[in-house]
Image (cartoon, rainbow, N blue to C red; front, side, top):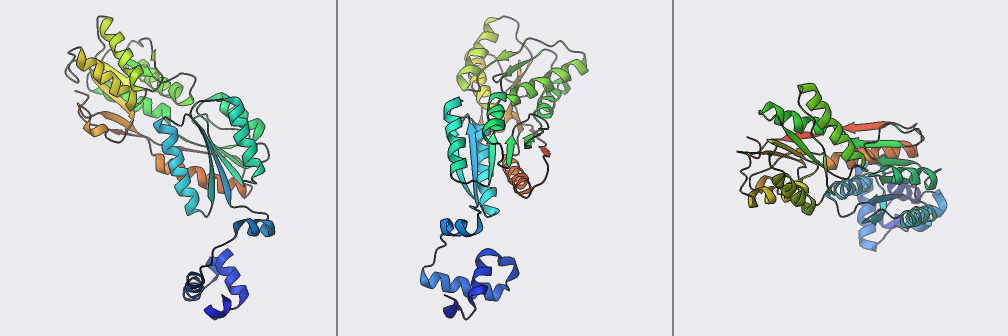
Amino acid sequence: MAGLAGVSHQTVSRVLNEPDTVRPATAERVHTAMRELGFTRNLAARSLVTQQTALLGVVWTGAQYLGPTSAVGGIEVAARAAGYSTLVGALEQFEQGALEDVLRNFRDRGVEGLVIVAPFERVADLARTHARGIPTVLVADAGPDAEFHVASVDQELGGRLGTRHLVERGCRRIVHLSGPLAWFDARARARGWRSTLDGAGLEVLPILEGDWSPDSGYALGLELVAGGELPDGILCGNDAMAVGLLAALRGAGVDVPGQVSVVGFDDLAGARYYSPPLTTVAQPFVELGRSAVELLVRAIEGAPPSVVRLTPELRIRSSVR
């Protein structure tokens, strides 16, 4: 290859391992030679020499939910851009044994770092036990951590944004349909809802807890209709629950937003085409993935634990009067 490109073997090595040190014209000659010869890198052999695998492990539970899945997609894209490959361990539901197996497998494969999407405390606790010694980033709105870097979206702020919009548009009885309150995100969104109502001097009504699914949103909507006096505003834990809620209200002849205003969370693809188009709190999932990988690269380089907290954005549509 070096002969075909007209360069030394050392230059070929630098193109592969330190491309920033090689002039673009020289690097292009080497890459042309690689293509002509059908050259592919043997990463396993390289790792034996460098003791670096260029592998990152990504773990997440709740694989059927939009939030964790979108975050992982952003992580994988950002990892490739940073020169890493990813091994992904996806669990639909939390199972301690399965999660431990994934973490052990990643350790055996020699991952250089871990990104763990931790929806709730038990996942974070297992990470502290089984990821010890491996640079790790938690993707969780769990606050600072003594051991790990943390990347998150400010879920409490999101809860405040959605609730404040309802208050500003004249709603006075605002119910929160939350996700499972064992989840970091659900608890933080509920705190934002509650603090906004307190600040406005409004009654804090009981939380109705769902499971993030449209079915639970539908069931809770029927519960509200059967209860008699409807609230005039509803903050949903996510857009999927809002879909079910809207169907329940529509089936009961309740006008949205004429009688009840609804705000979702996540800005699910297609939320603008709901009936009515859904006002919702958008999360910057791509930026979250990029931030998690940037934190992990710093962790691999030995930086002390730090926190990156991103800002959600209210997307105003037609489901609030």
